[in-house]
Image (cartoon, rainbow, N blue to C red; front, side, top):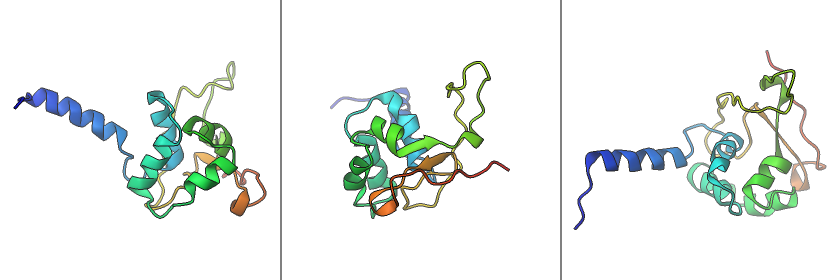
Length: 136
């Protein structure tokens, strides 16, 4: 049987903790964070759903209907940044290098925190983005 050092086990635990959604982290913030590890179908969406919102069983049906056939398409077509909460440089208005911390949501929901605006459609409305929340 192979023995692992304490340092190896701590490193493995850090990786596992990074891949698990943080408590009260919203789906959009989780996806934004996890896409640096690649996009393979709805892997990160279903991981989030399984761990934080197991009752959101229609996710795999509704997201593709809104244009989100994989995790990166969900971030492009289903969620978009709420401009009021994302400070950017005047020279490069599309620079999202600074990511504000998640504003947190209740457990069990796939709705985003106020950093994001979720596209509505199918049973969520008429395929438009909900109104943005203004920053205080």
